[in-house]
Image 1 (cartoon, rainbow, N blue to C red):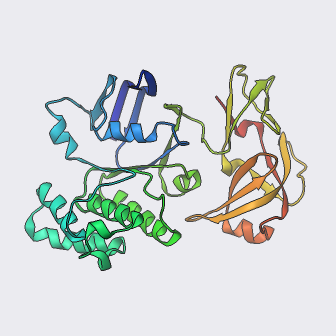
Image 2 (cartoon, helix red, strand yellow):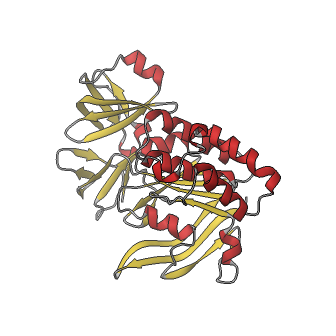
Image 3 (cartoon, helix red, strand yellow):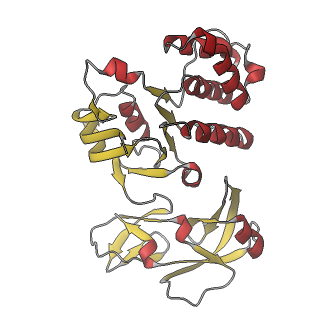
Length: 329
């Protein structure tokens, strides 16, 4: 499989602080990839780097196995679509904005109108086609910017927090549009989100960023504390881990590895905590529970499990997980 990107010895500095540090990493093509991490983790910086709008302080990039150089960059850039957190639309109508983008990408005039109608319908924007961009709400502006990027069908689509400030209905529409685009031949989508269950639900793969570095930890159920003799102490809990590390300060627990029950289980799982359900959220194909056990845990279960357990907000539960489900870093 061809790689969409290869990053080698990448560092990005802002005001003498290293905000991105990636030694060697490849991003496969033809995948929908979620870039996960807390605010300040470096997600926007990485997307800007991949879009060539931020220069690395050191290191090199390859795009589809071709080195990114000053000479090749203008042509390479045409293969990439980027929608930032606060996208900019030109004066004119929604239709004008998409039409101009397609013209600039060299799309044949005979195909432009059809593409515009298709993407407007796909994102439920047809009723806004002739509305001035300056009159759009923040959520509408973001959806139009994404429609504009999807319309010209770049090889790589980069989206920075595309689901923020959208209501549930429009989030579902956008998820469908992103998945449909990703299924096109050899199209690559990379989107950032701080909503980890959403990323897990719709992405083929995930990249987890923490303090500017890519980590294998799932970055959900992320806790800070002290590790001593395979016991990790948070503010409120002591969690058993399998790692032999001694200098770690963070752990993360995959929400799919957490078992939820009404009573404490008799099992070999080393970690078992009593708590209460404080949030039940429906994702694309799963249910996300937030449980307060002194620390807030998130668990992902099936709709069938939710029905079987008859869970409601406020009900007492137990959560259990193995020490091997804990990633230490």
